[in-house]
Length: 245
Image 1: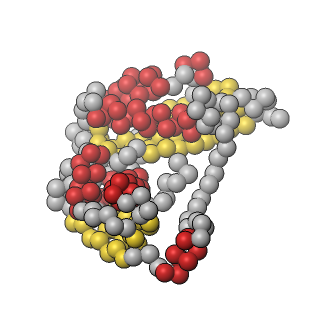
Image 2: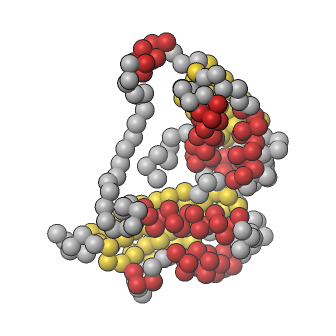
Image 3: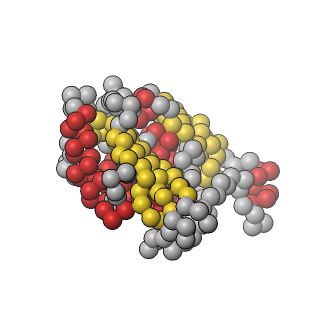
């Protein structure tokens, strides 16, 4: 086998698609807490300062959709409608019905629903059996969120994405990091130089294995040069678009 390259990406909890995933997941969790037999198929759509929720719920649970949405947005850190979304003032639209009786016929006898996208495999590249590239991308995204929420870097906003390209050797083992990309939403008054310096110090140096970094490893931080408008205000979000990451 010749050496090859493999690239994976991850997103932070403030990415608009991941915001929608989190809201849908939280609604499901709340239903299951009250009724373990709940059936929940909820889609969330985020655009500008509006969250729209639609789908089917069959459950005895009594949930407050508006409170769930606002609490989740607050937890993520979204509080500015001018740059992303504000948990206090955002519009929340809900259109929820019960599960179709026709679909229930298939599920009642032990079948599954009709949604599923799977990609991946277990391997021995990392302790958690995840491929090395996606493991690194996830760790960078988690660290980016950590330094924001703990105030280590105080100019960061919730939206962000990471991407890692790994070079594998002839034996199929990770040999080096070829490229690392990190895009992060930020306050408008911070310089790109400051962003690059703090991301290197508090994110890259804290997470990346230095033995896999060499003089040819390429680093890209906010390659477009500016990322102030983010979240649902910068790009619409939809449940399920980040299943693979």
